[in-house]
Amino acid sequence: MPRGDGRLWLCETFQVVYGEPSMRGEVVGGLREVVGRLRSRARLPDESGLLAILLVLSGGAWIATAHLATADMRQGVLTSASVMAPSSPMNAMGSMPTAPDVFIGSWTVMMVAMMVPSVWPAVSTFNGCVRAADRAYGATVLYIAGYLVVWSAIGGGAYVVVRVVQAWFSPGGLTALRGGALLLIVAGLYQFTPFKHACLRQCRSPHTGPASQHITHTPSVLGSIRAGVIQGVCCLGSSWPSMLVLLLLGMMNLAWMGVVAGVIFIEKVVPKGDSLGKLLGLGLIGLGIVLVATPHPLPALMNLPAALFPG
Picture (cartoon, rainbow, N blue to C red):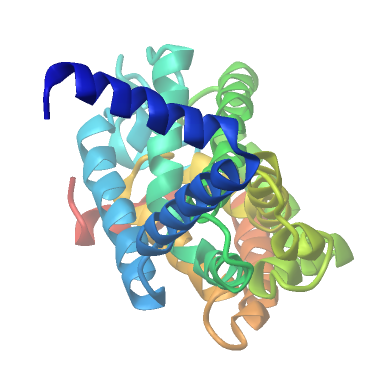
């Protein structure tokens, strides 16, 4: 085709497409069909694949936590005496040189490691709704992001709690141990409150409760994030006592992280695991009472997991 004829053909084609409404509609419809096919091929994997992705994400965060954890982050007000003498210059809760931004960043990684496995029921429910409504695969990713934003955001509050405990209690002393024991009792009592039960019910059955309408109706990007945030708030209402206990034992002590993460997972995922909450409450109350009365055995008791899982 001569060059001049080619130019004429292009001009005629653009005139037809953009000048005739019927042709314009056909072109737009064809483009929408292509986009729809691309979206259908870009779905998240099935439930087993999605679970595998979450487990890999959590496993990577556990490895990162092991590298990020410093000596001061592995000790708590209830365990410092079992690791170092009170006169040691590196005593756990007496001197935490970690800057707030480093603390919050480490806390975020730790939350990904501990909380991602237990959010599986909610993610599975949400992903099912996304597939049924033929929405973009990114909605599930945004839901998980919204959930993790909540747990990351409380890192600042955790840092304040650590600083307050440092200011109030002399590290390694009986006052620190008794103060930590009182906090254990508070955490144990909370396990029997109606609010705890309501939050745990939402975590175990995300299709019911206050977040259900956001899980089943996510018309936008903000809707997906909002659903994840609401689920995160409900799970925070259920699990904050476990996080408080972890701070008292040693925030980034891998052994205690494993114990606390296991308790949270059983409570939220395992059939009839919600009954563990009351047993945990009784255990925390009993341990707190014993440590208030006789705090001296605490170091040996709390050193057992570190002996089994060194590092």
